[in-house]
Image 1 (cartoon, helix red, strand yellow):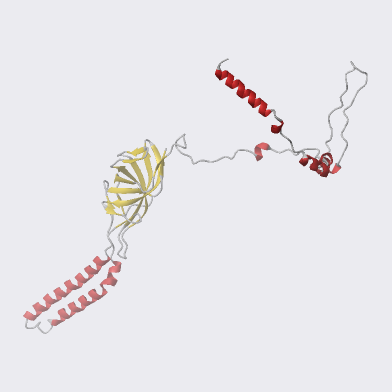
Image 2: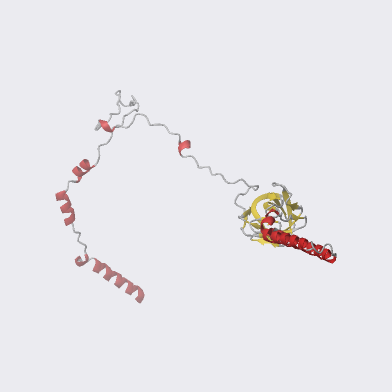
Length: 309
């Protein structure tokens, strides 16, 4: 036997000897169990604490023992009734599980695609530079359909709206120049996008028309109230100049020199009336017309997110 095996043997023998000594034996403390037995009766506690067993009506048919062993028959004994008040109902009410626990039907928005979760979002605020294919003016009626074509591609995440994409719009409201000095009005709205043969509804407004910014989606004709004020003053001044020339001609005539001041006085009165009353007279001066021919440049801006499927 080599030295390493001898060392292992001696160590194992010492370990067995030490563990078998009485000093290392375990002594269980059974005092807790004794106290429990003195104060509690486990069998009595179980019978008193547990609720009475409800009676279950035995509806099983009687069974008989085959006659091969004995000629006597045995029946299954019924359990005694312990508490009649706790009898279960004779019949269990039937419930329609399909009605009460049926799946919840979730209605998803209808789309033109079979995969409702493959939508690509174009965020609100996206702008499109387009050119109109139809003319529009303050003579256009509400509900008239317009057509636009995009001039520049718009690239977003996972999608690019190429140049040449068709947009549709409508005339929401329009009126011709009014007698209060207001010009004509056109309210336009872009409501459809045609992409790869599919039409998508959108909520967008016109922010530019003909290179000019549009506020509140209203394209207005020129308001000519102050122009009317100037026109009224010019009328009074022209009349005054004519009266001065008439007075001058009368002054060159010896006979008419007596009445020559009359035209000048009349001219002064008319000029003063037009000058003072020009703000009032201009109220009835109509504003300018608005007309946007085909080929006009517009800028369309999304009010809400647009989803492409």
